[in-house]
Length: 105
Image 1 (cartoon, one colour):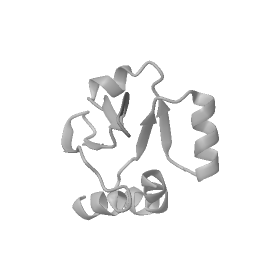
Image 2: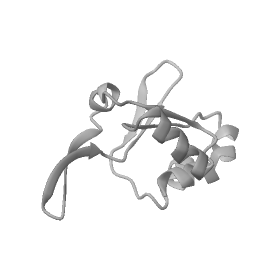
Image 3: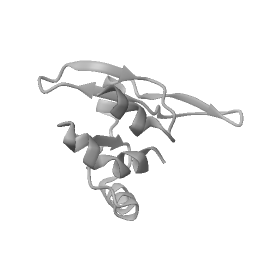
Image 4: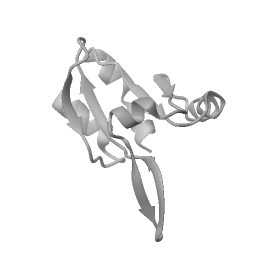
């Protein structure tokens, strides 16, 4: 749902000179199949080793139905052209997140 929001608002992000990049811990093949199915037209990166996910503190302990595991925390970083993080969104509403970001750009 979150990715679909960015897909649906991609032109508006482009109009604001903003590049969307997503990331997951999935394999390239699994990621490609997912992106094709969702018709994503923005870059999706694979981090199977989780090096970047850990560096951005987005590979975190989670708990669901009493079971503990590690997974990706949904978040967004706005990074400028020099690689400086301008803003972090550590908690997101997947239904409105893309529009929320657009409103602040």
